[in-house]
Amino acid sequence: MKKIFFGFLVAAALLTGGCGKAAYKDGSYTGRSGEDDTGAWGEVSLGITGGKISACEFITRQKDGTVKDENYGKVNGEISNRDFYDKAQLAVAAMKTYAAAYQRTGSLKDVEAVSGATIAYNQFLEAVENALEKAK
Image (cartoon, rainbow, N blue to C red; front, side, top):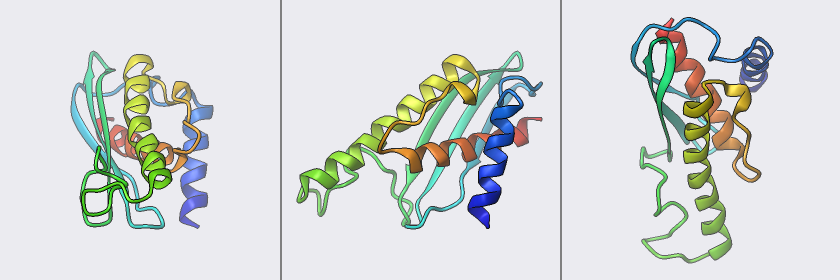
């Protein structure tokens, strides 16, 4: 039910022009996504200047709160499964892509999902929507 509701929210935001169209208060805002099946979640930090997105950072965290970074996908600091590590790092790179695209365009409809990193994409959308609710 939660996934259906979230899908509805994202669809509504995209169909109504996304997040760049509303009037937002200047300031810094944070938002968090819900947890995925593994307990991981995403966090976004937005800066708004002149009612527009002026900064955007996005990270995801593992269930224990550890940031998914260059070590994500390693086991005890080592790459024990190259395929798993490469997929994990694809998601880490996608997080930066999502944030940069949103900062550049100010519109969620212009942020494209990266194949293989759709969980991070959905977390990004949800976290941005959460932050923007605070900026209204």
